Length: 442
Image (cartoon, rainbow, N blue to C red; front, side, top):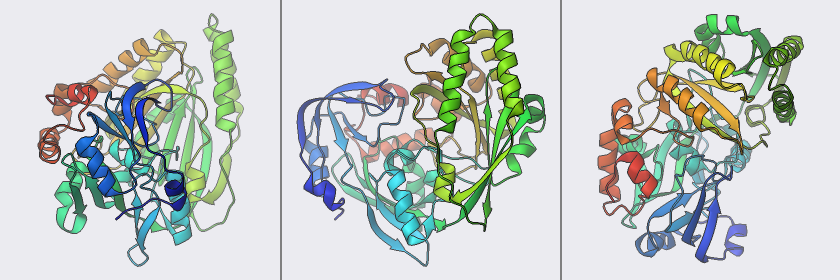
């Protein structure tokens, strides 16, 4: 039986009756009949069978898409949190799926274990990060779901399911990137690595040199991430490598201050793009290189506070530089109101059926728009570029692809839908959004 930390059990108060749920960005709102917080798999199974449908599990609400939205029941799985077990010799840990990544990193550090890679936000739940194929950067490093060695579900029939890599690798591949359509994940076992330190180097490169040497630049280090500021003519390149050196670096709000400055320049120089370009380009060219050393989780994570909307597509690696060239031109000629940097990462290929990285090494490109501003025209134009180059959307970020589009770019899409039908034959976990997205008849 899986139980959450004592604090959660002590404070437990089931929430029933009409409730309003909102995502992190405040862009998705859902009025639901119930938000129960089951404490055990038995209670969860009862909710699956009896609570008003559609049922949607919720993590930390960090998706921009309406994956959680429903008029029925949102299942709050936060009680399924904490360390359940670990194996020191095999460097694995079994954890409640409602555990936040920021809590997971502290737990693993106490065990002498570490995640092989991370994204730069650590507020998602483990289940949510897995469900949407959340990732970091590095051509030799997979997304979080590639660490799965076991996964525990309560399926759409209220039945407990456990898939283990030693006997059920095919089912882990089918359900590991799950979108919450196979049931509610309660626990996972993850393959970790021994704790390590990282050296983070940041440097500025002219945008022409960045694009000309893109493939070698992105594969030269353990992890490379590029930020391209519109109108800057320069790119900020961040490189991470393991080191035996010690350091005490912790995330700061420095990047947030930079975004605020870019917004101010955009607002005051809307009608003067040449001056805007000159000021930003000059400032970035003068920035000195920086280097920091610290524990793995402190180097990966940044202090993100700004609210924004985002679309991110995952392209074949060889399409990255060409797509970036088009996106930069798009912003600087048609959408000059954009001030957020373009974020560029890489991810190793994997075998998970609904993973955007299935079968190919990937270049991931994300574009952002400030919260409260109309992003629709810009995102549509950017999507057209990404899709023309074989892109697959990030499941948790804004996109307009439909079931027919997805089936064309995910080779195992239909197989995954077959597994979904077997695990949730009555469609208890299928909301109207997911019905349209995945072509599931309600």
